Structures are given as structure tokens and as C-alpha cells.
Image (cartoon, rainbow, N blue to C red; front, side, top):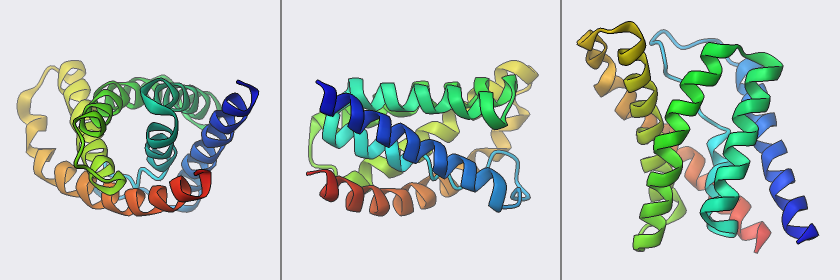
Length: 159
């Protein structure tokens, strides 16, 4: 149990560090909502090594800490909205089988962006935000693939 907690804490720290690096080093992208999402690699790794509960713990701890340390309430709301779709969706794909960490991560990136867009549409009370959907789906899939490849390397180290 202590080893599991230590490893989940380490994955949370990796995710938090990735989120911080993205926040500090990378300029905002011209399209609102488009980010690298590097912290998702910790979620994917936790999912494949420790299952849904482990991935949920890593994700929600990282999201809360990131919002507290270098975000705000709106950061927290949008990150949670994305995570509430992405983590269960990724877990479902993993459970169904036939999906590698890269495929699961791609789905996670797309679902995370969809969750954030849905939250923005509810908050702004405008369906016009749906115009961002194609850009967010492409960026979510592209960065999900990159994060999935990195997560695959992390998963191999954990095993």
C-alpha cells in the first residue's frame, strides 16, 4: 500500500511539474483552450499501471494543486470539466481493450477538450462556441498522441 501511494504521489508530482512547465515556458496559443496538455501523461500512466481509481486520484489531485498554485477558480472549473469526461472515457477504452496508451491518450485529449468546451458553452450560454470544436478536436488528438508516446515510456519504467 505504501509503495502504491508513493508511486501515485510521484505521478501526481510529474503531472504537476508538466502543468507548471507548460504554464511558465510556453506562450498562450492563439486559439483559446488549445494547450499541450502535458500533464495528461501522468493520468495515462496511472491508468495503465494503477487503474481507474489511481488515475482519478492523480488527475484530481493534480488539477486542484495546479489551480491553487498557478491558476484560479476558472482554471479549476474548466480543468475539472475536462477531467470528468476524459478520465472515465479513457478508463472505458482501456477496459474494452484493443487500445494502446497512445490511443487512450488521444481519446483523453479529445474528451478533455470536449468537456472544457461544454463547460464554456454552459457558462457563456452560447452555442456559438461550437465553432471551436474542430480546432479543439484536432489539437486534442495531436497532443494526445504526443502525450501517449511519452506515457508509454513512463509506463514501461513503472513496470
